Length: 81
Image (cartoon, rainbow, N blue to C red; front, side):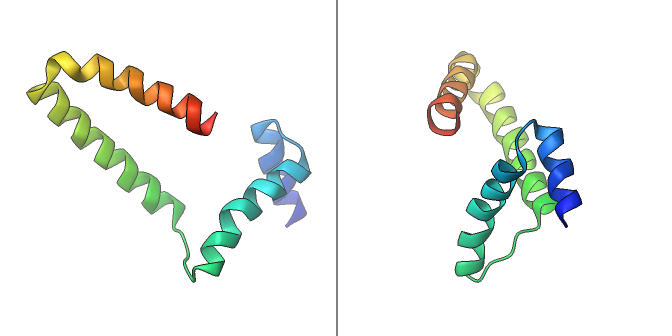
């Protein structure tokens, strides 16, 4: 298992400790809630939802599309950076 952690840490440019910390921060709340996560399914749902929403915005609110993208990027930096 430690080989997997080391590979993930190296691929993301973080230390082994940081990779473990991230895994625990994500995994423990899920375990406490009695949940499991299929990462591929979750990412597929997120991507599909984003594509559908982008299409709706581009077709129905084209004047707002660029502003919404800029705001989304700002939110990512503020809340996830």
